[in-house]
Each structure stands twice: as C-alpha cells, then as structure tokens.
Length: 115
Image (tube, rainbow, N blue to C red):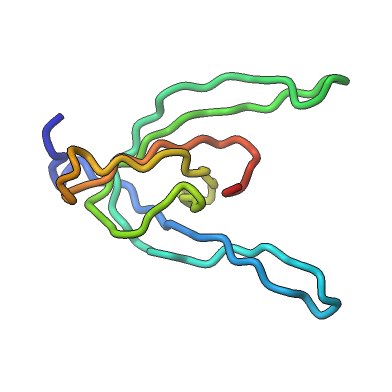
C-alpha cells in the first residue's frame, strides 16, 4: 500500500483520550480531553451491521471505519476519534510497515466509548 498523498487526507479529525477524575462527592467521572486536534485524515468506511442490544430486543448499528493519518506518537486503542460530531472508538492502530510515516486506525461506532 503506497503512502496516501496530501490530496487524499481531506477530512479533519480530533483524537481524544479518556480522563477519569473524582467529582465533588468522591465518585469517579469519565471525561474526554483532546489529545490532538485538526489532524488531516483519509476516511474509509469499511462495513456496517445491526446487532441485538439486549435479549428483549433493540438494535444497535455497528459500523467499521478506517482513518489514515500521518504518523503521530502515542495513539492507542483506549482513545477515540471525533469526526463531524460523531465518535469512533479506536480498535487497532497500525503503524504501517513500522516506518513511522503514517497510521491506519481501525475504528467502530459501537458503544464502549474507549473501554
């Protein structure tokens, strides 16, 4: 797979990481902070399907998407991507050919929110 050209990196994304803090009553609260903003990416929608959310019924749409970006250190699967107001859970980060040139980040839209 050749490196993507600058013209293919035409989507702006933000990468966020989860931060757990204590609230005023001592309980733990999760929030998301920006790790990197205004990153140019190539977006590739891979697949989508519906699955049952409970035994009683209800459906959840689960879609897989890949984002390709220029190499960025310390991106991990405990993070998420925000693109056009939609959140994508990072499932796998591929440092293509270990060349530190670009990352192929596989995401889904399932409900784990970085867990």
